[in-house]
Image (cartoon, rainbow, N blue to C red; front, side, top):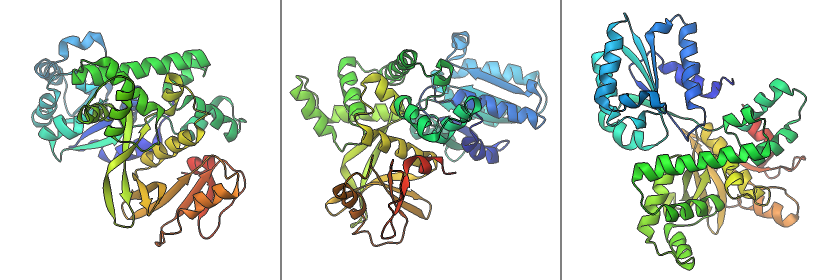
Length: 401
């Protein structure tokens, strides 16, 4: 089991604090294991196992507790049998109707430390913030980073090169359970397709009560195929019309929001760097895991530039950056990453194989007059830094700590 220190370091300062710890992210990205790691850490710090109450609401054995009142009664009955502070862990809490009322009541009625996970971002934007405004902290989890992937591989194959590891990572992505499948091609793709279908049906169709499932599937497939490309709801609406399906741009937007809420993909807004404003049209979308794309539609190696962008985007999000696409005149910068007062610019390309490519990737920075670091990332092995612009191998960038 990888300890996932990146997340644990962020959560530690809030352990034993009167704030609900909320861990969100796409299904099967490691949230349940994170709860186990936290429980183990608490026990190592002297907390008795008996003081920890853990519920996983994906289990049918807890179906009778999937209402706020039933859960409240069960927890309160068990709490009475224990002395001192209790530690409450609720996995996939969105399966409990009106769960936010129960969680808020536990805060009021018990001496407790609460941890919850969920596979829907509306946990925070809607239900949770209504009851717990200012009383929770959110931690978004992602599939394995390339650094975590290499760490895992080196446990059993310490001599394997980062370049070799990266080939496998590009193809299959970072969903943690793939390690159990030994990265065998057919089982891995079956697992990732099943994951994609579970997100679609459980976290989008059922939650949003979507009736036209076929239309939803077509829109999700369009986004999956076009990660890293700029498009709008109107673009998709016109594409669907050409395919014989009529759909209003507003409905497309609702479906895109639903996919984002389920953490299947992440919208990225465009920022006008000259006018210093966020543009309201033509977003980009990146997938929660590029391995899902390979399993569902294939073509990761054919679309290697887009996959490398997806990998770098998720890495920036893991590191805590807010990310936009930069527009500077008629040129576009792949990523503008902001973290408090720190800013970096990043261009991503497969190889700097020609003077034309070199000019395109480095020249985009010509109109950016500030002194923030500017990067060009590619899979070239030689350092081509110039004019104060830093060139790095993508693998080296991903392995930075």
